[in-house]
Figure 1 (cartoon, rainbow, N blue to C red):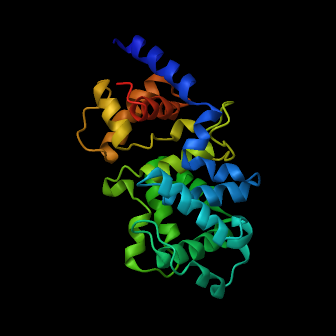
Figure 2: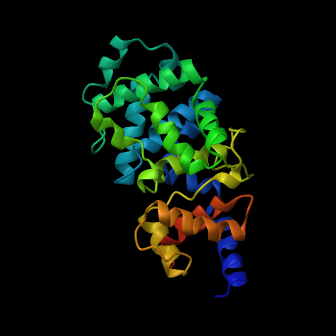
Figure 3: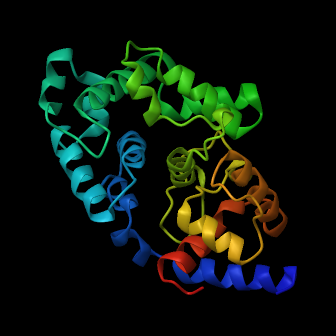
Length: 255
């Protein structure tokens, strides 16, 4: 395929997969349980954090996590006291354990109190860095301003350490990207869609290489940057819409 044909092919796949039918099969279904902006962004951040491994396990543990927060994540983050965190004893998703979970609750409360929430914390970092991947690295510094165990740092990725930061890029897609399909929320206004990067994983990386859009052999920050340049040529305003195409082609083994 030449470039024009590839763009037309991918645009068609975006139309095919970027639909509400996508939601019940994806962890994004959890923040879709809520209508309040703060509930959506806090649930979204926590669910994106544990969105790796078996999909069924991710969704089951996401529901457990929301139940532990009384299915009112924004209220819990704003008002919880230290003793309330005891309820997370025993919660685990792969290597994300109860101590990690408690740190995330403390940090999210700190971000609400000091930065007026996740959107403003990310937007502050983006304004200062003018690059969203560098902003993610700065956000990690903000996130760990609270006391924490060193082990918990691995649960917030850092693109400046060559991580693809797949889960944070996915969360940012959920929050920032605006369209009429009803999958992504588009509830943040301080970061432009054009700044987003594709949440690169094994499946999207494999498909991108098959389509000769990606030469990097590792799914790392360099690959995210390389693929981003290609996608911005296809759509400079909304480059990460192609996540639906690449993910769908991989998940349904069309290539």
